[in-house]
Length: 365
Ligand code: 8OZ
View 1 (cartoon, rainbow, N blue to C red):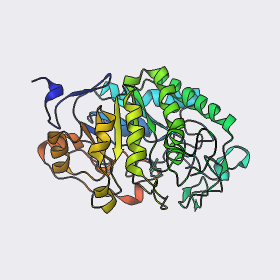
View 2 (view 1 turned 120 degrees about the horizontal axis):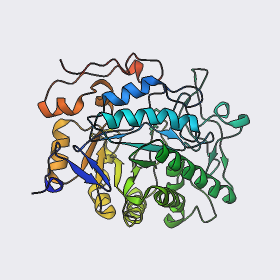
View 3 (view 1 turned 135 degrees about the vertical axis):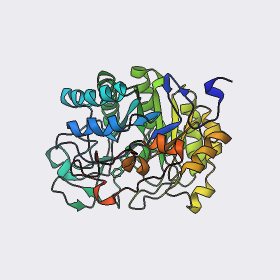
View 4 (view 1 turned 90 degrees about the vertical axis):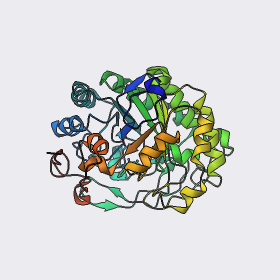
């Protein structure tokens, strides 16, 4: 039996053009430790290097443009300085035998005038204010600002921003890119009929609402080759501030999965509900979503060791992405293999700060 057919969490696999050493992915984790300009420091190099035994590292969400930024101290990927800093990270991960893709992010309405160029309003499919909170450079929290609806003529400009970021990611030495179309940020704001009230070709029908996310995936695929592009979705996630769901998550996301499935991407990555005990997670059929997509599938959200073993053994998922356990267990793959004790992460150091709670979690002794 070839490695690709062995349903073993610890066996290698090929996802698109990317060969991974095991089926354990490091989920994208916002840690807010870049500088004000979105440039990573050497601490990030150490942090990612320590976690390179993951089969695949999905980078923390990374801003494709100033307009796309919604949280202070998050990294970006659109200038030579961003590229140079990320290059140090990808080199370190590769030297340690790992693989890393860059998650491309535009927050849409989840931003604040103080984070935008010239204090402008954040942009969104429609002028509907988000209920969440955003983290500002003043180190305080505030409500996201009222967004303005994008003009139809502005949408190709954002597509260009995605392309520039994808080219920068290529130059920075990543193994691929993941289009962040989850967690109620810009692309998901287009997908859901709760946040998209447009009347042009980017709103209304399901075909129209998925048009922009699909255009983004196609555009970055032209740069990378589709087999190095993944997409992340979260059909039943409300994010921190209770963003309403689509009126028909199964139909809408199933249709989108089917369309992106035709492109021959590396993978589809799904946030399967906010917790595994979420009733809505039971209501949504992720197996049907996987089937509609038809390719490699990365499952995410509160999986533990046994759930991950079962998900891969049963064919529910090709890989499982772990988030919080990777914060506090840099050698998570080895610990899962040995069924060793896991260290609990300290929530106080999730976002912002320096080495504490970032690069100082020990490996097993
Ligand atoms: C936590 C804090 C800030 C941003 C996401 C990028 O939810 C994020 C994020 C997570 O996808």
